[in-house]
Image (cartoon, rainbow, N blue to C red; front, side, top):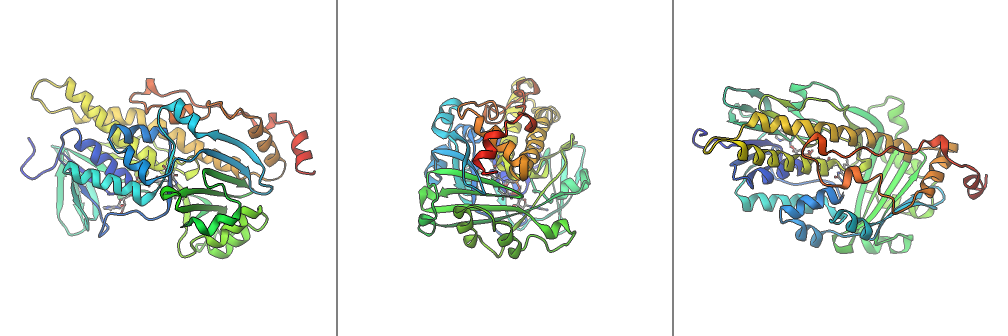
Length: 427
Ligand code: FAD
């Protein structure tokens, strides 16, 4: 038994990943403590897309109704060319829900974070703010974290969910973040402000263009409209530190279609997000310290799976805890080493696939010239009801490497028929 007052699990970081893991593990009857460095729990940013591989888990947690009530279930996901606005391909999200059994939702980040926070409170998770972790160490009985105030805390398992700039990642792996030289601007505005922009209020629309893209969808029951503008920064390419500034935003979208251009002045200009990720690594578990969420696998956001992968991580840890508990002799504690080994065995490869696909996706979206036309030709030929490219992500979260579905193999650009595209583009 743990010493008095010591939790079974310490979770560092109270973002979506940390809270998701804390809730999942508390449902196993474990005593969980979350250490968050900020003075309050919260999320910055605007909208978040949550695909069926996440809503499936929220349903299991009993949280899907709340998510549905606070979010929006869009009708379609439509991809358009950002220059000429023509439709390239779409997903019918009602049909997608039938296929995967769970909806595709869009929700404000702070609403999803709030749902997880309230679930943790109800489950009795100990939630501590103003706790900054500065170091990690394995011990005989588990692992300990050192805090900025000079104290230390110990538990049989420490989950490091401290995000892209993770201290645990720095100490245990020591790799650097990778800059894509792209930057994101976000905004959520009252829907009235975009009503005459030609927007599709019931769809998620992604406009893909040369070195830029633009995402739009409604939030909060349709009262708000979320927009994300992403572009390659010339200042970043020139090696400058102050890259991604608002003057670059305006220039990047100059040649785009009307609906996109009209959205740009509404973007928040006091804050932007440089698009960084890390190369995948094979080891997330170091003794009893397990990396989770962006600390383990920060992606570029083009697959919209970052927060989802973090939630899947926590669910997987808890499921393997359950398996080990069933296998343990009566009264004995589950084998934490086996739990984290099983977690790492399945999650590392899945997240590697998502991270590398997100990078490739970004390249495909941002093509120019003939390659843009090739991409458009291939996308336009796609059957909207062909789910080969979503099955490996939106299906049930695998618990073992054997359950992980095969990856989608994209059609090579070189195979595209360019004739029609050239005509359509007036070339
Ligand atoms: P974080 O949210 O970074 O949380 C880390 C937490 O740890 C923070 O609360 C932080 O304060 C705390 N912390 C950090 N250091 C310490 C410390 N030393 N001690 C104590 N606490 C600490 N994902 C999706 O699934 N769908 C989307 O549509 C989507 N869109 C995106 C759009 C953009 C523009 C971006 C940038 C990302 C998007 N993502 C999306 C990705 C998603 O936002 C992240 O993957 C996800 O939020 C990661 O959650 P996390 O809890 O692992 O990390």
